[in-house]
Length: 291
Image (tube, rainbow, N blue to C red; front, side, top):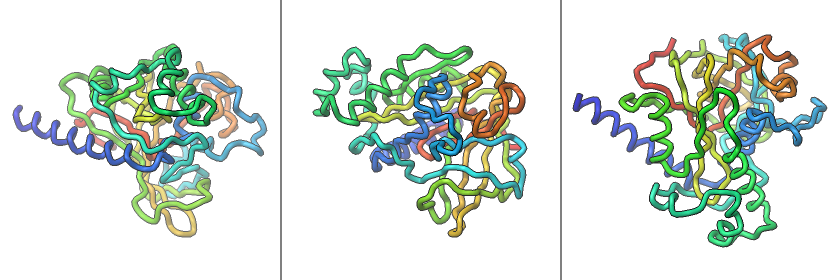
């Protein structure tokens, strides 16, 4: 028992150090892709262009489960530094004590902007407002959510979903060879049989634009299949170890969900899969094996 406890905390310390490194990096890592993924999840479609010919390339992260076979190719937007038009200055993780001392509500946005010396008319202010509004939305049916403003709050939420005594494993998408250069939308080939993570529950955490690190963490009821996918693409032989999830039942999704237009399918007909941007995390119980 003592050995297991020690290993768990060693993992947590290592991951905390990784989060510090991630959040100290250039804010290009705060992705527009993450925000769009969540907006579509909550059925916000006002900003979506319904002309597929003019679709934002960063929306092309969806595929079907039939693509998860060795040798299959699919067009995917992947960037090691997914650009956001509303980037912030360098962010960092706060301790729970620091984060809890700062208001985190759209009703206090003016005070928050003043605290961080950000102009109310700036793109940064608009991005912060978008983050706060998204965090304040009611969960959709079957969803449990939290906007984590510290590593401690993220860990508490994740353990609350996966089990307080559960040893945790975190999955991320990473470029392992020849990081991609523009254009980021390209054909990728599955070079190995995808490895399914046989977990009954998962928690996904998406980075959000804010002056300090904020992650939108949520868990959704229903069958969700998690995969590790080895991809290769581009003339430079970019190699990506990607994390993907397939949502099996989409019958209750809004029929205008962008994935249905990207894949040219209707709700409830096929599982919808997508990759996670490199600055997102997927938590699963550590004891589940891959298949």
